[in-house]
Image 1: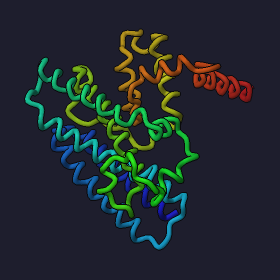
Image 2: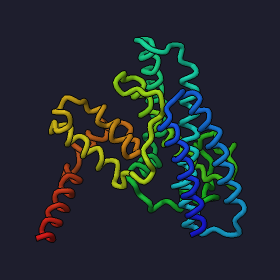
Image 3: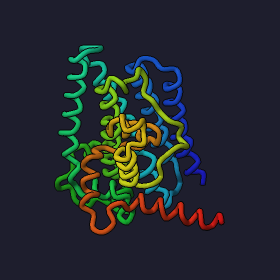
Length: 279
């Protein structure tokens, strides 16, 4: 229980720091720089806490390296990329500004191909947990063929290899959403917008994408005058859930065997069941 409280406290602290920026607005370069320092210190605190423990259960170790460290490291990588991109931008507005961020988005998509087709990425996106002991417990790698070279530079006492890979995936998803807001003039902001930590999407990402498409196709948001990309950005911001390439995910849903509107049908069944109980 103490471990869980410590982990939760770290994540809440990060969220409160982000909320502070969301409230006061300001310069993204300065904000991202501040977050880099804060997240680096948080990562150090997490490492010192872990190494100071006399014992840790297998499940606690999985929780740390699957749910906690990747969130901290992922945001650290994200804010570092935001700082790099923003300080390298030679323009402040106009077509060249949009072209610059469009180029950064293309580069991100190209780099994401390095992990999107591997087995671990599919495991993560499917929400599975049956191989957590293999991916998120230290000392489980017994061969090194084909591993990314960053593994050999990590601390074996504070890394499982896959927690770092997961952090990079999280960072890419956050950066994807951020770059879209910089490209679209109507959604650009002078601060990195965040939502209170307690408001989160706890269903699958595919379920949220299915809901977004249903609302978009039905034209029930702004009389159908708002685009799919903007609706997606809104839901990502509200629920703090990066969705990545929603078009690709939707096309996979179209090829589902059996029920293609799985989540929408579950919503309907749940609502009808509740109505029946209320009679």
